[in-house]
Length: 215
Image (cartoon, rainbow, N blue to C red; front, side):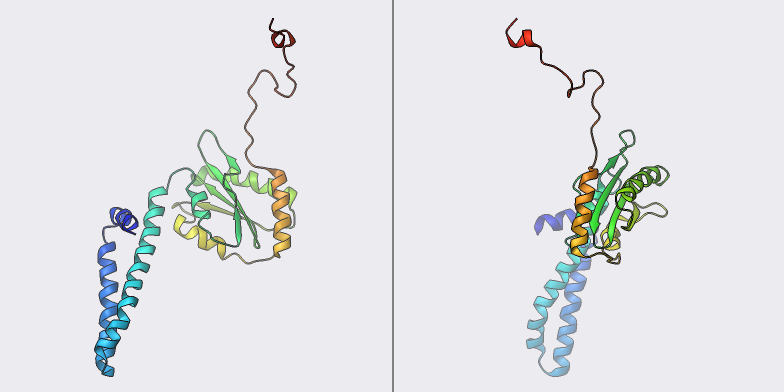
């Protein structure tokens, strides 16, 4: 808890005052209700753990915002935001497409709402990579909805802190069994395939028999 508070305070120094404000505010309300009902001490004691809980909720929200602000703009930030979704979606650990020159990438997730593709890169570049991946999925799964999003702070993009909620709000259209079938079909597509270096094809190369005999 101390580490979380320290990290959050570094990114947002106002977190201390927000936590104190909520803590004091909840205690003040509990004391006021206690005075009006004739039980000030009793309600103040009851309000104390509620005040602590309120302060911790503020810390959690501020810590989440601080964490997103630290990774925003870095390669793979969209994948980290997607993996914060706790249930209902199967998110690939690695991007399914990457532009080696610009480091733009596309992350994929599967849920009951269909397939979601999230681009991580500049708005004027990532569109082509997203469209290519959308077409690849559509060829294999023509009847499954494919949702395309761009993560970031630019125009038309989804902020990192809102990305998880945006995905979770997509309307379910499939059963869990259908979702499992979609996952299996997508595994057949695979993800990024590293290019084979030019020269000898490792699948066709033959061993040097003289070298194996020590000559």
